[in-house]
Structure formats: structure tokens, C-alpha cells
Image (cartoon, rainbow, N blue to C red; front, side, top):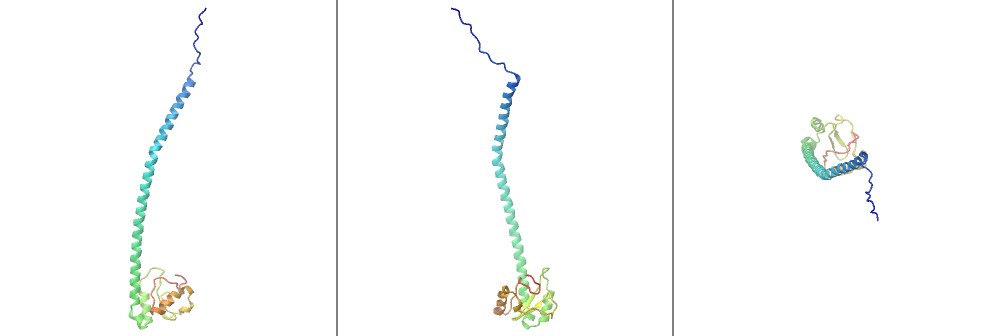
Length: 171
């Protein structure tokens, strides 16, 4: 018997093209893996930083709101003190409307604001009009002004920082 000759398996020779494709795939996988790992590390850090910035912005907004509220409260207190002073003037209680008008007209108030006074039936002073100009009766006011009319009848006088002004046609 003849020994059978041994035949080595035949492999296709590796070409530069086929070995480069495998290397390219491994490099691409490595790069993609590195990017995914970097994103996995960076995402929680960015989320924590964003949360910290949000808390800082909310804190600054809260402080600004508190400061504005304090300023508004001080302005309101100053306006109420001014109105209380005008409500206690002797010319108001003596019925000296001319002197009261002069005091109202000389009072420093915000731009666009005006002062007015009422008796039981009508408006007696309005700094938007010269003294002695015809002024409306309470019955001329819209129904929503009835609360102010009731205060006038109940208290004798009503001092308010903001009401419907029929002469001004605005609040």
C-alpha cells in the first residue's frame, strides 16, 4: 500500500485589503466604545452641574423677589402714611374744601396718580380738575364702586389708594 500523500489545507492568502478591513473594524469599535464610555461618565456630571445651576438661579430669583416685595411694602406704607395724614387734616373735617384742595394739589404723588375726596353724595375734590369744577355724584359711579360708597356712609370718609376714577375714566 502506498502511503497517501499528506495534503495541507489550502488557505486563501491574506491580502492587504482583507487585513485592513478587520483592523478598521476593531479601531472603529474601540473608538465607539471610548465615546460611549466618555458619555456614560460625562452625563451624570453634566446633570449634577445643571441641577446646581438651577438651584443657584432659583435662589437668586427668590432673593430678588424678596427684595422687590420689601420695596413695594415700603412704598405702600409710605403711601398709606401720606393718605392717613391727608385724612386727618383739619380742613377735611371743617369742610374747608378750598384749603383741602390746595393741600391735595401740593401733595407729591406718583406720576399719573390723583387725589380725590367725597362726601355722602358726591365727589367734592379731584386734583385732575381745578377747584370748583363740576364733579360727579356717587350715583354716577358704576355698580362696582358701591363698596366705596358704603364705606363712606359707614365711616364718614374713605381714603383709598386705588379706586375707579369716574373723572379720570381709569383706576
